[in-house]
Image (cartoon, rainbow, N blue to C red; front, side, top):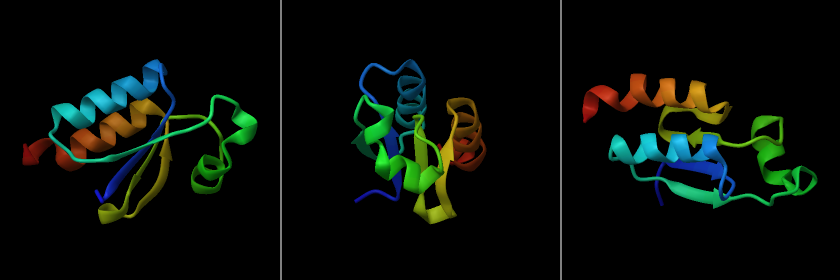
Length: 84
């Protein structure tokens, strides 16, 4: 199991941007596909306090539910960009 988990939705352009960044940085991660209905996204809401995706969890660095693709990509670049 990877330390990074990405909660995403099939076809979500913001999720794809984050997944592409993870791939570009060569990071292993677990993908959790969420239901299309916001009302059924209980796990995402519990983790991040909202039902939107993408949401990133990075156990190694204490990130417990970061929303917003722009923030996630910035975090990934700052945290892992120099390691590649």
